[in-house]
Image 1 (cartoon, rainbow, N blue to C red):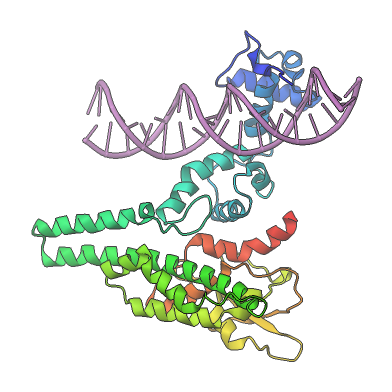
Image 2 (cartoon, rainbow, N blue to C red):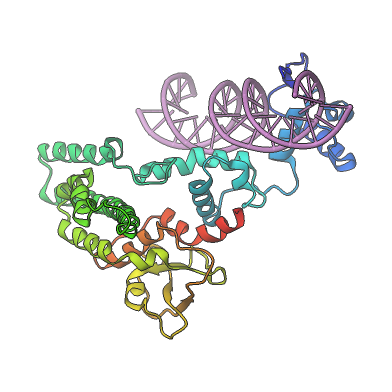
Amino acid sequence: MGRSPCCDESGLKKGPWTPEEDQKLVEHIQQHGHGSWRALPKLAGLNRCGKSCRLRWTNYLRPDIKRGKFSQEEEQTILHLHSILGNKWSAIATHLPGRTDNEIKNFWNTHLKKKLIQMGFDPMTHQPRTDLVSTLPYLLALANMTELMDHHQSWDEQQTAMSSLQAEAVHLAKLQCLHYLLQSSNSSLNINNNINNTNNSSYDQNAIITNMEQEPLSLLNTISNVKQNTIIDHAATFSSSQPLHHQSMIPHDHFLDPQQVSFSSQSCLNNEQGQNGTITNYAMLSQRNQDYPTVDHETSWINVPSSAPLSIPTNAITGDASSCTSSYGGTPSAPYWSELFFEDPIMHDLS
DNA sequence: AACAGGAGCAACCGCACCACA
DNA sequence: ATGTGGTGCGGTTGCTCCTGT
């Protein structure tokens, strides 16, 4: 190969485009199409390389480009697609009409990545981080609190600060705990499914709990005086009762806007036998309260035939669990909710 | 008001892939 | 089969604007 880059040619302008250049480019493409990008600059009277012209057109001047802030839906879509595709910005862009790969990439790097990190998720794997770095902010907060107390704050101020930290720690701990747990139990399920064929019986649910207790999260729980037993109880419940739900199915025509629905696996647990002979599994979808997606008991049942083509992603169960633990508060994170309802159709679409 | 640091974003760079001669 | 041109893609850079001191 060894072909030199087109922009090596001397005398060609680089840097920001002027309105005049933009106008020349737009007019030329509108009249003649872009044709060969390499030939275009001369034909359009531009002192730019073809590559620069192409970039300017595709990322900025194209008439179908949607500009402005990303909507909540777009954000959810990006988060979810990124969890599937990674940094395949062009592939992600195909699912967001009017958005360019460059714009999505920038949005990811400047907003979403930081957001995930702040929420305690690894932006590359989308999994909860259990390393020191992720718990550091909380440990620092604890240190700050100790310092505050040392400075003779009033009891009320101390209580307020403590409550705030507790709430945040509880939230993070729950998310990470449940996610960890359900991932573990999913692994457990897989192992248990094969247990008759292998001798691998060393992995049991007690081990899940034990492992979980060894995570930094339990430290956070202790710090913030979380009712840890409650979490562990839920953990045990889900460890012992998950099997069918990992294999439940949701058909496409029941796919709903992730902003509008939440999912309750407790309901699923209670109704998994189905309501007639032909239907084997049910899921309940409910309108999602903007910030607190608690289970709405007035929602309707949705038929989820076992023959539906796509399975509920494992992480859906995390959303489930969060709903089920709503009795003691908490809000599942946006990524989980989006993953729950976006994954299947898009995965199907991509395949 | 001036400056520093950070955030956001447009643009560039270099590599990879594909089509074609 | 190989070389070359064209294009697309992901990572990075650097400029501009904003905010805090």
